[in-house]
Amino acid sequence: MSRKLFLLPVAAFWLALAALPAATQPAADETPRTAVISAFPPEMAVLRVELEDPASRSVNGVEFVTGRLAGRDVVLFLSGISMVNAAMTAQLALDRFNIGRIVFSGIAGGVDSGLNIGDVVIAERWGQYLESVFARKVEGAWEKPSFFEYPYANFGMMFPRSVTVRRADAAQPETRFWFPVNERLLDRARRAAAGVTLDRCTDENHCLSHVPKVVIGGSGVSGGAFIDNAGFRDYVFRTFGARVLDMESAAVAHVARANGVPFIAIRSLSDLAGGSGQANQIGLFFRLAAGNAARVVLALLAEMKDG
Image 1 (tube, one colour):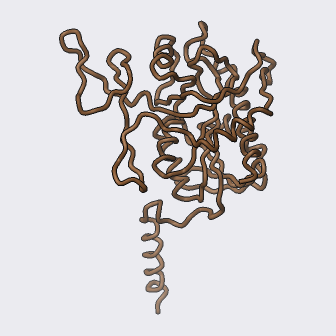
Image 2 (tube, rainbow, N blue to C red):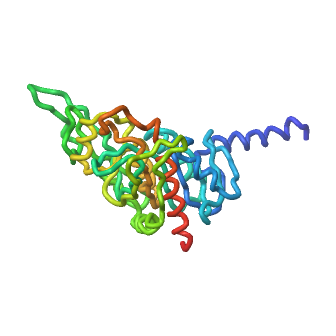
Image 3 (cartoon, one colour):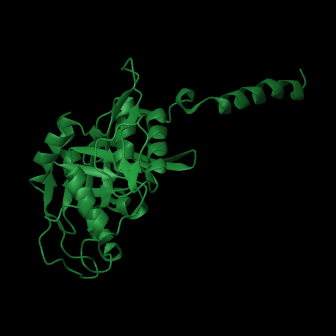
């Protein structure tokens, strides 16, 4: 057989493999792991430093780093900022790794007036507040399509609506606004948080006037917009009872529910989403907030050592 004839079937094999959808391609790793996700590098930095036996691999341009963190086998990766990136990378990870649970670590904007920069919020449910209909105005009133559900009040022309979720274990799609976090993870987070001390000063010695705290429960909302508006912040708090607002958690919660994988998000406040009465402070406190969220994540992973 000539060398050319031998190479033809080999080339055909690799072309066929590359054409397979992600879910049917070979797993990148078979070890059961906890996925720990952050949106952008500073949020992940503290966790990367603590990772033991790191091994990196790239899938579709996303770097996945496996290893052990606080005694657990994990895979760390960045979702990228905002909803589509977060959903895409979360599904990619579930398709290529053996993931038993998802933990999101990162920063957020504070919505609850009882919270301050540096505080860590572990919400019990997440919703997509920008999944909306932008209604037309007819004779001084908003006119919206009748074929969507509208479970919450509008903000001007913006009418939040529920979303449809398809699941392999459900005969029919479900329509919902809220995506609950896993109750067992929430209970473990409650126990873990009791022993965590949070930072109140940055490396540059910019210190908060208060001692940050961990708050567990309540709601969080996510959407593809950076919010720095006091009026909209108030609306989000009044309408959804939200304590915190970010750009990724609800998207990952949606993916986790569709795949039947336990999920929890741990978010620390880097700013007050327009509610501070001064210029947004994310540039000053995002590293402090990211570090506080990571501390709670490490404590949660340590609390899960028994299973």
